Image 1 (cartoon, rainbow, N blue to C red):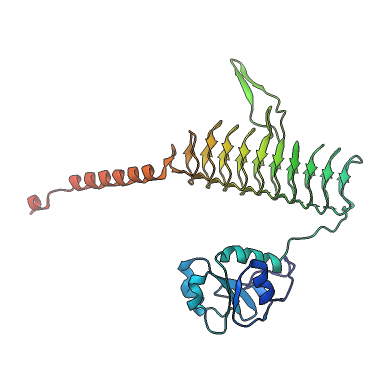
Image 2 (cartoon, rainbow, N blue to C red):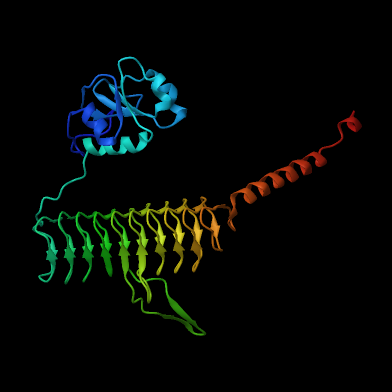
Length: 353
């Protein structure tokens, strides 16, 4: 079995190019230092060759830049002096953003083939733009609307009445019901969107389920990770704002409202009716209680247990979650107490002598 040393195995990815450095510099708004040339791909600093372009965004890897054989590198102005002789530089204050755009230039997203597979099951009342692609075994329900350029993957299920905007990508085995999606939304494999929320009344004899009558609204450019779940609202809607990034294995409860460009990382859970502000970040395995208000730009640390509102711009850690400075003060104090207790428990060496 061969192992590719560089990104973009041709069995899985469609490559464009080669591209000139002048064109790539223009694409990312960078200044070019060195001669213009054609490059045919992207690669990490340590494996890149003369036909590749690479990047440096982390000072920890500056020494790797010194030894790279890349034909060109995307770098911050601070690293110009370390670029090896013979390597051109695309200089920009945001090299990682440049890397993202140039990588997408060489390896663009798949484009719809504008056809439905013969095995797809499509209700006669569905309205599907002729430029959309429907994969093998996909099920498209009654009165569904699918916009131009969409790709619906194999075995995906789009429930009755769902509306999907333009240029969306719904990957294999995803299911969507009771939902309205904007443009350029990506739903990764196995995601479940629009199922019943976790709502019930408690009686002496057991539980009485409450009908979940809301929807899921997903804004333009949002991405929902593999095997994540988003419950539809109860009497309100569950709202995922524009540009939101939800990682794999995330649970979003009913009536949750997530602001634009927020990030929810793997295995986090957000209980019902919580509001998360624009550009907030919730790290892996964090748990948020219901009916909370997480402010704009707040940061929730990994495995935090959040049981109270978090103000805008505040970072919280721990369980129960508290501001980061208070959390670290307690850690230091506890460590000192443990060290003092260990010292007191040691036998007096002089007495032993």
